Image 1 (cartoon, one colour):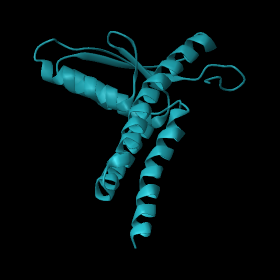
Image 2 (cartoon, helix red, strand yellow; image 1 turned 60 degrees about the vertical axis):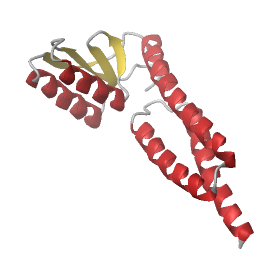
Image 3 (cartoon, one colour; image 1 turned 90 degrees about the horizontal axis):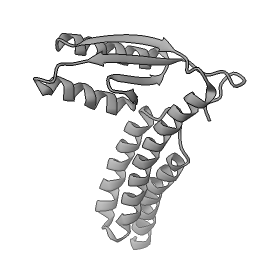
Length: 166
């Protein structure tokens, strides 16, 4: 899954940070941003993302936010020592996205008895959610395509139902 360049591990950008417990608002804001980015939690106060210019910049912004909240933060570029270590990290990230995609699939499939207007509204909302998940989907699981197909089926079925009524 993550073997790059003939089995050599890829680079990761790491954010090591500590924040005061009180007030909790800045700590919660940082946690939410890291979750939205899809960062892998390696340990308390240490998260990782596959390294590229975008992920590095995003973690640099969060590091700045941590220091502004009287915490401490540093950014590191690193490689896992083994392909297996990287595979474990990537698999955990993929499993997180797979669960998110599975929720979309379930919601789309549960809409079979909804009205056309409800299905169209749901399809719009689920497409937006798919875009949000795609932004943090660094190691796409098979559920990614299944979720896209389930959302597409919502609109396909809606279009067919509209045409049948005409």
